[in-house]
Length: 345
Image (cartoon, rainbow, N blue to C red; front, side, top):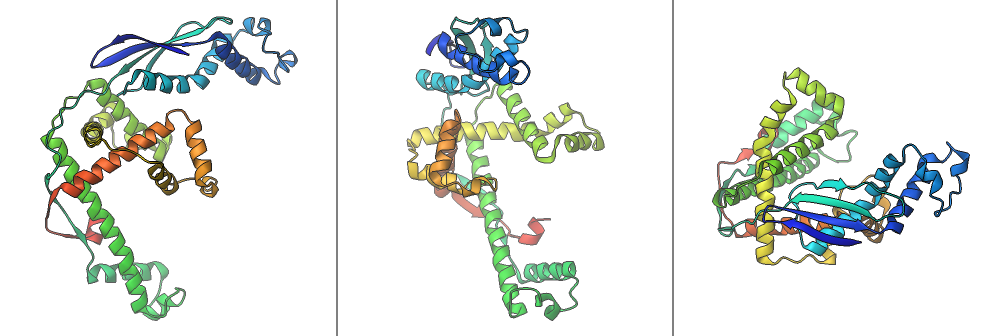
C-alpha cells in the first residue's frame, strides 16, 4: 500500500490510497467465490489466476465493491496513522473503477479535528446536586416491594427472601439505594464540571460535524428501541425526522465540544495509556453471554483484529482519564440535596 496526500488544510484533508494489484485481485477472487458458490458449479475451486470467469460476470462491479469494503478499513486506519491525521467526520470514500490486474486507487476526504485553544480546565467552579438516601426512601422502597409480592406484612415479605429479619432486609435495601445515590451524584458532578469546561472554553463547530453527531445519536436510539418503535414514536408525537434532529441538536453539540476539549486536555497533560489500562477496560466492558467466557488475551486479539477498534478504545480511555483529572481539580459546590427516589422519578 502507498499513501499520498493530495490536499491538506486545517479543516480537511484529501489523500489517496493505492492497493497493489495482487492484493485487490485476491480480495475480489475470495468475494467472487463466496458470492457464486452453489450458484455456478464452475465457480467451485476457482484458481486465483483465472480471471476470465470473473471478468465476464455481470455483477463483477458489485463483487469488487464488497471486496474493497472488506479490506479498506485496515488500509484507511494505516493511512491515518502514516499521515498523522485525526478525522472529525466519517470519511468520504471515492474509489476509482477497479480492473483486474491493475492497482486499486481510492481517494478519501475527511474533515479534521479543529485546533482548540485550551484555556482554563483546572479549578473549575461547578455546582452540583447531591443525591441522598433517607429513612423514608428505605421505607418507601420496602413498601413497593411488599405490594409487588402481595405480602400482607413484614413476616410474609421475608418468608421467601434470604433474610432473617425485616431489619436485615432494610439494611440491604439501604445499601442498594446508597449505591444508586452515589452513581447519580457522581453523574451530576461530571455533568456540572463538563458543562463548566465548555462554558469557559468556547469553540466553533462545522455544521457537517454537528449533523453527523446528530444522526449518530438518532441511529443509536433507533437501534436501542428498534426501527418500528422509533417510527411509532415519531408518529405518536406527531414529529418528523427533522423535528427529532432539531430536538437533539443541543445535546449533539455538547457531545462534540466535550470530546474536543477533553482530547485537548489529554494532549496537554500528555496522558499515556498502558496495557494495564486497556486490560482493565476490556474486562469491565459489557459483553454478550458468549463473550463473557473469553479471557483477556482472547478479547485483546478480537480487538486488534478489528480495524480501528484498539485506537478507539485508547482514545476513549484518554478522555476518561482527562475527565477524572478535571473533576479531581474542580472546586465543587453542593446544592440542596435530592432524595434518591425523587431523583429517579
